[in-house]
Image (spheres, helix red, strand yellow):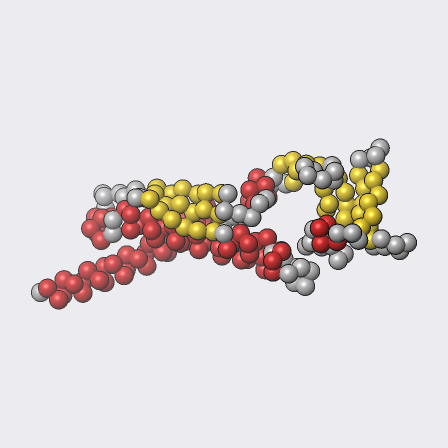
Length: 201
């Protein structure tokens, strides 16, 4: 799980900030921030799904970033906004990078690009693979059964994954999402206040 925390603080020095203080309370701003932040994350995940997911390679059920988008939520508590991504497993690993080791199986099965295994897992080929392992080099391959079986997976005991900051929105993208959403919320609130004042006069 990943969580981003944003605390809403109000500057009361400027006239605009004074109007903001009268118009919206911190918990109302936190609601706006949490929703807009979550929407920014979802938009980023959907863009990655379109960019990195190869059409026709695997089903929607295998689309890692669409799963992440579906598991993103924005909530708040008081003046604190939370943006939470509950999965899928491996999302933080992609963001931060680091060592990946085989745990439940003797090898990591790495699907080869341009083969039927691309975008899929070894489990999708249960009973169809032959493993060839070079003990001295500590690497190998998994191929389809048969004399002319196609090599589908590279096998490793471990790999080091590079960090990928593009997995989540940039700070600039989040700030812009917050700014735009707050500006729109303020416009709606000010308009509502003006209409109420007009009815009272």
